[in-house]
Image (cartoon, rainbow over all chains, first blue to last red; front, side, top):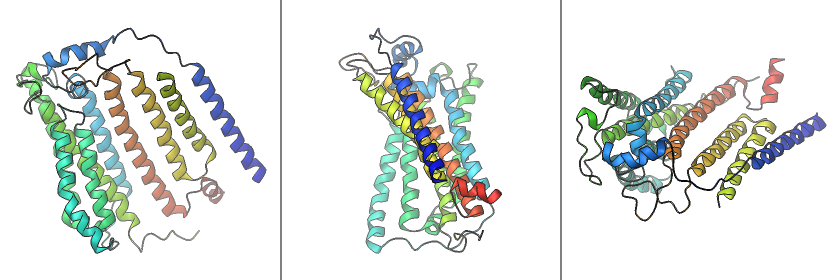
Length: 247
Length: 112
């Protein structure tokens, strides 16, 4: 058994090294000839088409907005899957959390974390950032709450139902903004062609639908990741359920 | 610098592959999966590099911007990677509650 195991490990090592060597042989750096293809069009057209300063946000929420809707649905599907796996369990008890000092420190920190997350979401069309990144920062508040105060405190403060509602309304907001483009005679998720003001580039109110879509995605990602973490941790923290069955 | 960046991506990818192939603990398999994903993301991001490029934020101060398309693809891939890691961990928690172990050999042995 031992020899067999070592052989297997050696085979895995050899396979990985061979694949790495093979990939490394394929690396060729061609001299830079300028950006071509769709990227060139996005770079030159962002200021004219959308009015946003961040080209990556313009690609995500304007040129390829429909992809982003699908991407946000992936998170929704995962939340549904995890909630389904851990469904129909009512857990009342949880750990008592960490010490008093840590709890007070956390309480001082929470407003600043939320402020930082909101600024990342709202300024997504001006600077690096956006709904996905800001939503992930916002979800860390839930993680900290569950670790420091225990998961039942987290559930008592912000009920899981509220989070699910926020997440669903984020998805609905995204789709509704897309449908406005359809109503005005353009395509789904049309931005400035549907009459959304482009504004002055570099100002907070600019970019047409991009800030709104950022907020929708931020709601969705923040609430979705919080729900994911909470539904996993409520299982682990329950003392009666954590011991595995005898086999 | 670009070959070093590609090389790093390849090394991280291969470490992830070795982890998946050799480890029997399911949690370590998931770690390998996310390492492989990290390697691929590094490769995608560095493929958008432009010599002397500036960040793709308008107005481009002092030079040509880097290619913004790989950045937005990477964002998509990060979200999907996080989603599948979360789902995999949920399944592993379920397996641990059912069998009492996360060693894949022992789980196979239990089945007989």
